Amino acid sequence: MNPDSCKILLPVDGSADALAAVRHALQFCGALPGASFVLVNVQGPPSLYEVVVAHDAERIEDVRRAAGADLLGPAEALLDAAGADYESEVASGAAEHMITELAENYGCDAIVMGARGIGAPADDGGLGPVALAVLQSSAVPVTIVRAGAGDASDAGDEPSDDAVRA
Image (cartoon, rainbow, N blue to C red; front, side, top):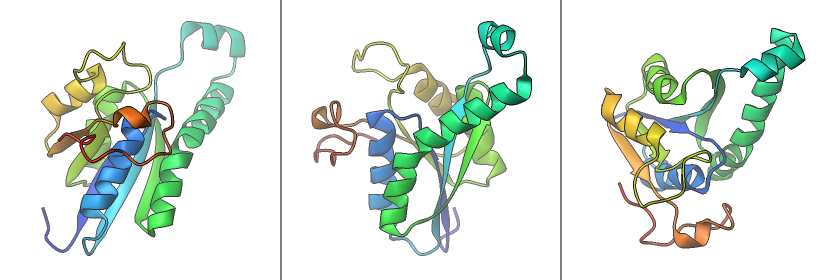
């Protein structure tokens, strides 16, 4: 990692854990000179139902891009409020593969992400399937962040001191 710059990939899916990861990255990396962030939202491939009903691949892509941009909004607001340098992308594909691919494509030094995404099965205290896959396959360091108990009902609240586990 270059000591003069640090580029962090932040996967965002609208979950409390994802926003806690953005806050964590800002707290620990935001003050570094040359720190920048890449916000990504990965939309899964269209379902057969979507393809059959929409009949228009371009329309499906437009709807997915808009949904991804909407999910990036709260994280972009946090980075804007902190005056952080960042870029955003909505990608399509399998999240567990796209996150590591995007980190490589953007030349990121690390990934900071939530422990469980919005679609992860009920919380059993472990990692969600996407976080686990990224942790196992990433070529760069991965920090996994879990939102505090107070974040579960309101993603806009600050996480408690013991909420972040890396």
